[in-house]
Image 1 (cartoon, rainbow, N blue to C red):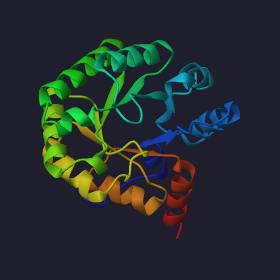
Image 2 (cartoon, rainbow, N blue to C red):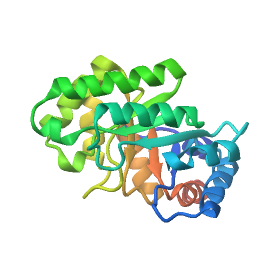
Image 3 (cartoon, rainbow, N blue to C red):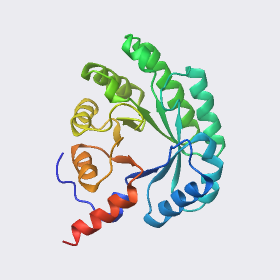
Length: 230
């Protein structure tokens, strides 16, 4: 896919405005939510402990509250991830981004990954929440990425996602193209990790991404406006 035509509002509506730092302060989340409402970002991406705070700050704004589950390593049990998901939704989240169990994928245990995905997707479907599956592509072979795409095509989460932003690498155009080729229009793609400027964001969107996870959303949208005004 190439040269997707976007207005600044379209671009902002594809951005998940992200604050996952462990040392973030309450005023940082207030700023995150304020910016999200001002720019009309799609979602704030936060850790679960901030779900109540952000859902209250964003009430009635139309900005979604997205909680990271099994984050950032994915190395908790399926039961733990399901509990985290239920807890996040109870506390005001309406989107869930969960990290797969990479050890089980590396071991070739695809039934484990499918069961994990089915359980978390099921909980989200019951509550009408959007669910995204984080692959953490920097640790995966292309065959492993394709295997996860195959599972996603069967289970049908809303999105598959490139990265947590906490691994050894982030989103790449090559990975987005690979994922898009594997899933077609069955599942949407979120690119995240290392997206700090408008050029990178647009390249990933043109490759097939339909959400962008970034802590640089304000910079990206302002950069896009400047680009259009040249």
